[in-house]
Length: 239
Image (cartoon, rainbow, N blue to C red; front, side, top):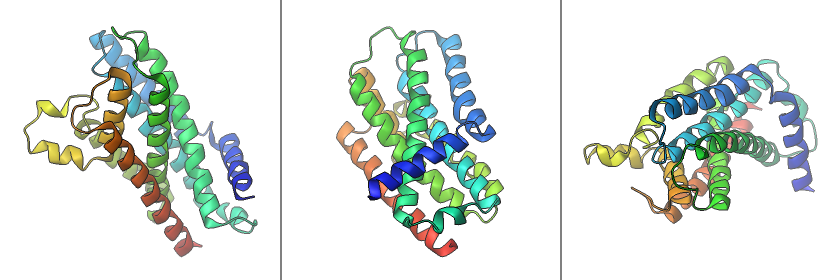
């Protein structure tokens, strides 16, 4: 069964790569330390909470997926998957799934931290989990595609940082996009992370600033399908 194959590969990935240095340093330590820094600095962080959780998801998912792909491309262990009776789609889905699971774990840790310092309770916890998982799928797909596209696997993390670090500021994660000139909203709308931030903002605080929550969910679903397709095509060209 295809689903069983996907879950089997995902379990293997989680077991082998969850403790890799790249996954721990950029995927767990950085977002948690970043969250703690804002908590210490501001105390009341209700308006920052959605952005801080979003940062945890983005760094958690992308770091885990890129670390696994870097290792497999560098030591040529991808071939072991390809000789097994699994398709490119199943391999891609497994990697995206396990990345989103890891990102959800980091998000829940971050959520646990920020919730203790929020003045108001989180509005809808199941919706927070749903948006976190959906965002994890989208950004796992992004990380997988970037890690497959670069010629030198070691440089994948560098390219990801060139995307992740600016997105922290162009998505409204650390400062509301409404505080910037109107033309900057265009940059925000072109930033994938904006829709994760807005979805979590609505889930946690019951309001959105620049994007309707349904629209945010649809964009994240579209990005998941887009990067899944692009990753499959890239795998075909590489192997």
